[in-house]
Length: 99
Image (cartoon, rainbow, N blue to C red):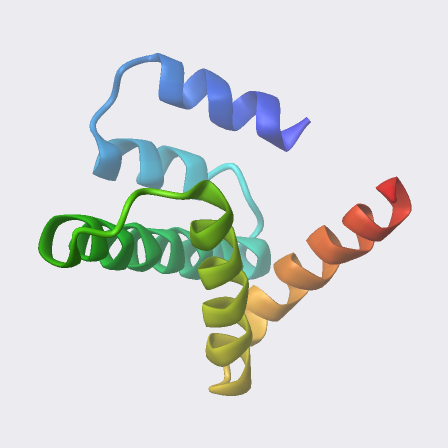
C-alpha cells in the first residue's frame, strides 16, 4: 500500500525535495528516519554511478547499481544507520519469501 502512495506523490510532478517531504510525512517517525536514509543512500549511489559513466567511460548497468546499493547499505548499517537496518531487513525477508 505504501508503494501506491509513493507513486501517486511522484506522478503529481512535484520537485524532488517536495516529493521527499510529502513521502516522508506518510510514514511514522521511526520508519521515516529509515526512509530518509534510503533516499540519501540512493542519491549517493546514483551520483557515483553517474560519475563512473561520465568520467570513466563505464557503460551503465542496472545490476551493478543494485549490487553497489546493497553493499553501500551494508556499510551504512555497520556505521550505525539503525533506521535503515529495519527497512533493509524487511525488504530482504520479502525477497527471500519470493524466491
